[in-house]
Length: 329
Image (cartoon, rainbow, N blue to C red; front, side):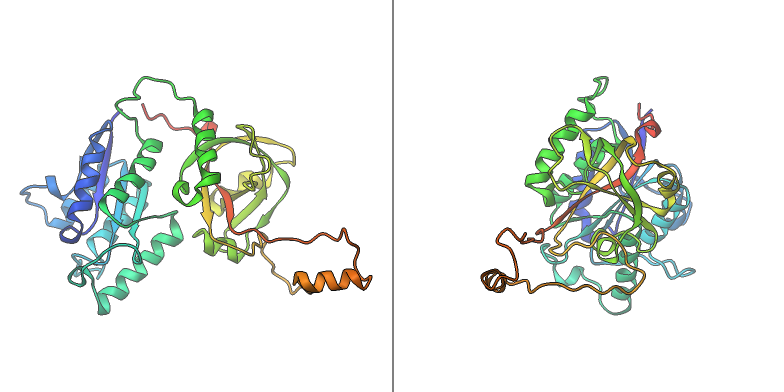
């Protein structure tokens, strides 16, 4: 069954990006909905947009530095109302925010004042509710989209060919261990073994990965298939509150066949577990010179372990069990 994709964004400032999306979707078995094809209709523009969202399977939100058209009744932008409609009806949602540091944005295409504040608030909502991707050019956006479309859609070239999902997952993991930022956000199929009990995810983890603090649990879950990733550091699985109940009843040692997204964050000091009570810690001085001096004075043995904090954090973000795989044919 062909899926229908709705492209939501402001128009004037994102013409090249929208064109890149349309061109990319030509490689997939989909029908496309967007303002380029609305034509002349009797409905008001907002009614037209919302009707197209209702008839679509996948919502693609592309947000740059302009708020766009505003609905006088609600005070919200068309893009935000389209997003809220897609959320209300349970559509698949993909969100792409412009990289404000890397993208070259002319001042004429940037909103200031009240519209900027509204846009910033909308972006915060998107980051809180979704794993968003960022882009800095039409070409970069197309790259991000192709990665996500391959997860959701059936490519024309691959139609009818059974996919070796574990082999594909291994290829993604191999690349993720070398180029985590480039691969972050890719969904893969894995088998993991649960170790220990679930815990409340720390505020640091939630902020780094756009998860909701207080509504996210983690569990140690090393990858057992595909093989070869035992010492990769990708050994914690995070689950939001909506899907947490199924994990709270699982036993240590259980093997799960799941889909998850690999996620990367630049964190030097990683505290996975949330702390809800005050705790005291007594630590020896961390400088290597002091450790050497303490050893010479006999206060520490020469084989005393020196812990080096990791440079970054790699995690798995649970999306669904393999048994819940939806039919995309």
